[in-house]
Image (cartoon, rainbow, N blue to C red; front, side):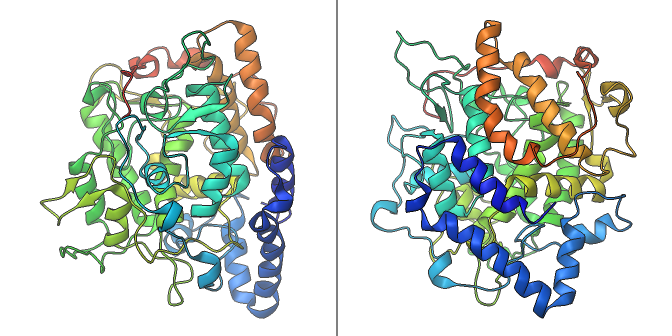
Length: 468
């Protein structure tokens, strides 16, 4: 990934929604300026650190000889711009005043993502649980230092797939309340009922939808117990000695996938959500929920912070989930402004995970019985253009993922062709900052018929008009 991408992305995404006045958003401009300065400092003053960072930056180039080593060496700051120093003023996150915690009211929506629930409970996203792109970008950048391009793309995709395209809003949980006289052009079900379009099997903390009567948004204490245990043996109430890394979560992802194959006859992975979003969600926990300090400028995630963000209380063996009570911990400091986590970082991180743990790159699913997983070759899906060997060369993986995303839209949107075309056109500007920088082979149209034998590909539960 080119270092210049950061600046191009900031400018391009900002222009895509002019309602944001970037001249009044000092943090946006500061991110671009300080990112350049940080890279120069690293290259000038610490050649070894710069070389290590560069090794991680390359998304592919032929396959790394030690992908597992790269994964194990990656910090909690992500794969591109390091977090070289701690700045308390810059990284402090307020949970007072307008951002004081408040449990959601009866008519306020919460959903499957603990990071989004915590943001809404503290007013960094609308407490209603329904947000516009502008509100998403401002809130996610201010709270987590999520890159503008990433926040905008995720929000735009949610609006197109599971939100209200006409109103320009999306729900972090169940269906939005809408004017019955104004139709919702998306399916309007929200993230809680976005199976295979946004939410997918093998979640870090939620059960597969089919095995839980369509509910993939409620936390599974059993799953949380298992992922909590990968951080160490601290069984105290606080869990301060637990430590989580992105590599530990990647290895856990492999275990969860196998559990889905063993227990879910409708297990499926082959959509953008399951190939990119699901493993990215594991990475997001590390990159956005880690606390930063003078001692740990690249961040650390301990049991205390993990439980707070996931709304869990108690000790191992007696954990309890407080539904909708996800919180930002006290004395918690986000990643520095100079090190935003951008859209490009998502694909680099997911790619590193697949290279380090190649068994996790699964395309296919169970065929109606447990342990009946049948794979689909990338080569067959792409008419021979890509294969297991060249998928991670150059920009091929990102290109592959974007085609999965774009060609999945007609499958998930049920409506007139004109509405589907409008949805695709709405999303395009938010993908362009990264797509415009990729060198992609001519992939053409994927052979989606290869997924027809997997019942999980067609499984799409809908939800009640509930706030969770």
